[in-house]
Length: 431
Image 1: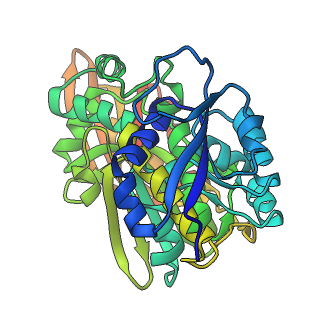
Image 2: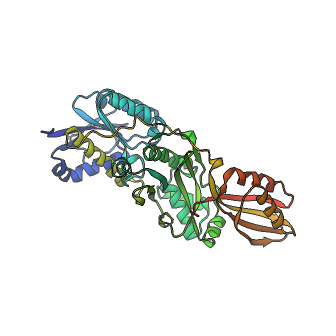
Image 3: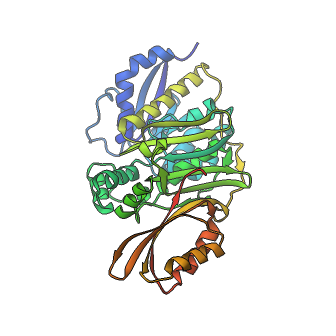
């Protein structure tokens, strides 16, 4: 017989925390019917007791000291939605040491300290649930741990940051500049006032670390993920990409190669007929390739109060079932060992290159000669536009070793006729 009531301690009542309260309040009866247990928020950690709170907190004790939740013997589940790393880590460690199950949406924390926290959870006979940490309301973690467990995952490729996808969509559809699209994203609440974590690719890298650890059964260090943002993307590159049959997206990509795992976050040209090319605005999508299942894509809202709250409450329900022995013990990620990481320099990629050169005879011949020396084969070479004595040239390579490509770039930059290397973007396209 399971518990009639399971008490929850909520650390934080901001955007996501309010969504959790809202869902448990509105859908509580339906959830209780599914799991035969009442889920009750007993205490909520807040910064100030004076601030107006969302509906659904009637009869709930508001506290300003996290220890009142962490050490409360009547609370079985602690939900961390305060964000940040240091305070959240200490609170979660305290909850685990007190034998409480933890639900969190904190990707930054798990990407950097997940292994330590999972080990602590195992030592104390509890688990950490983190469905909301990647992809907001899109179910990703549980499908990877359970539904796709029979597969050897060969590739992960995803749009897992809504801010950058919104910016790139506005640039593509409305011909906005990067600066204007970023400003609009901030005004609409899709981007923070300090957008650096999003636009420089850090947010996507944290999420990729979590996904890759599960997909490849590996302990992932953040410095093994090559990270490049969208801050240097221009409208011109988006237009040229369209002419060439591509869309420009910020992708997080993990590849399982024989020599090791390759992990990278960067702007990418992707064929217009690829499913990810149709993912626009603040939506996210994650594309997996398994040796048995083949290709599969999960799509939905990657952030926001209610989508993220939905994933948090789904984890709370899963914990309740675990407490009441309605499901077997959760899979813990403590056995993951470091896997070989293949350096990006030895990986084969296609490249889009835009450069400016003095419009004079022999330029194309010199470029072709250097690429030939470095074993770089070209798929396309096009002179796009000419202003006075300067020509803009766009090149697309075949799949070539990255190290060879960048050696060629060094030699090309030294040519007197080359005024600037304007842009280099990787191209994701099977050959």
